[in-house]
View (cartoon, rainbow, N blue to C red):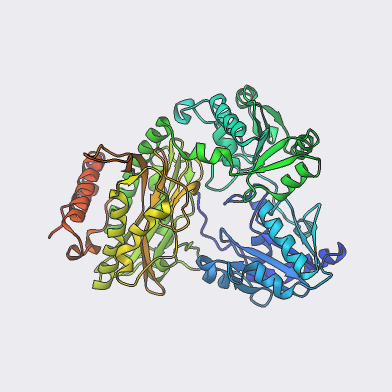
Amino acid sequence: MFQSFEVVTDPANGKPRLEALRAELKRRDLDGFLIPRADVHQGEYVAARDDRLAWLTGFTGSAGFAATLGDKAAIFVDGRYTIQAREQVDVGAFDHLSYPDPGLSGWLEENLQSGQKLGFDPWLHTLREKRQLEKLCKRAGAMLVAVDTNPLDAVWDDQPDGPSEPVELHPAELAGKPSSEKLMEIAGKLVKAGADACILTEPEAVAWTFNIRGHDLPHLPVALSFAIVHSDARAEIFIDAAKLGDDVRETLAGSADLFPVDAFENHLTALGKDGKAVLINPSRAASAIAMAITEAGGTLVEEGDPVEKLRAVKNEAEQQGSRAAHKRDGLAMIRFLAWLDREALSGGHDEISAARKLEELRTETGELRDISFDTISAFGPHAALPHYRVNSASNLEFEANAIYLVDSGAQYRDGTTDITRTIVFGMADADMRRTYTLVLKGHIAIDTVKFPKGTSGAQLDTLARYHLWQEGLDFDHGTGHGIGSYLSVHEGPQRISKLGSVALEPGMILSNEPGYYREGAFGIRLENLILVREADEVPGAERTLYDFETLTFTPFDRRLIDTALLSEDEIGWIDEYHATTREMFAGDLDDADRQWLEAATAPLER
């Protein structure tokens, strides 16, 4: 199993570990220290060795922050994780605060005193974060101190070793473009930006550029590494050589010079000494990288990672791979939903057994490399928690007349998937059907929209919310995020949200996942993946138009649809979507699952 359901932290550990850290800080003449959930790459996932926030506080969510200052300490989480933090973190050791308000800034402004020394690890904070911290310390008359080694590591006695999984080549037929061509594209962007080189700080960027994949992080098929790309298309990769087999080493050597990771800082310093202008993303690059370059005499070109936009626009091979991955995954999802309908209320089934069954069915494809994130298997009131993660302590057994939400995904070599379906066990009440249908209307609005070239995700986001807004309802997450090609399930810069400022371009893959959540009762989310493409020609159109190709095909729960709230066009869309799903998969199912699919995709009754 790729997902564990065991409770891995104990709130009782928080206080003694915090005391040990404070003793180490005192030894180093520091009054406080900051503990982000981050590693040197500033990515979404961290290896067990780098999960310092979880070790210190017990909090295992994907985003959070802790700080200790004098005899005070606090943990900061956003609204997704408020309940989880209460369960995992000792309130006697850490104050529980939200961000962005008051956030770390507000807490430091209230508690940081003149003359105090606040320590931070420059490899775990971005350049932008460091600048914000410097301003806060200056206002308080305090000193921000960059540590050479992390004091938390000094008291973490059983800190795991770093990952050492082997690197593999990503086949040319799936990558669609050789690394030499990608390096030329990056070099062209550097010349345009007036930069001599750029730093690839994210392992996803290194993986995409050099057509490699790895297994160093949970659910993200990358090898921990850095790279430097020069404006003449030369490159250096910094990676543990023990992870490289002869074939991988030989292939990479054709595109870049290879160095161990501990040589990375010296190369940054060399760029500075040579007076180079180096492009980094100040919001994603560790401040230590910027410091090494500028303190040696180099200058920074502060822009977005040039790889991010190139990677976001999938080439034809990547698009075809995604279609194949979604068809494979759709079959597993249909078999899962059919099994749920037959077995969920037969006794003994719960959130964990359902998640295990879904992973088992994906494994039976013979192509599953990993799940793309921990499955959100959420029954009843847990479905109202958008980022709920079941464990053996929280696990709920299924009961009749309640909603079950399952948000899951898979990593296949040809593509990454992410799908959410909400279903009812037994009978749905009128309010469940009303809110489900309002969410479905928003989903259809995104799927069917035509929009002019240059349109951003923020301009489309309202479509997903409109019908909810008319009823005084909304949801507090974005409507859609970007998706990688056998890479991260959350990929930028594209997104459909109130903050989605990047114009959508053909080849970008996004999620379409509006929702609604009623605390303590139920939650609804409906998610497909969609591909931006050029729309069919519209007579009289004066602008280039784009629309979306649907990649995900799995039935929506007809029992939760109130057709009285749907237009004829919306009913037509659902019936056509279901007919396509039935045609795609009926021939690959056994009799029982085929019968279920035929019933689940039958035309809606007006």
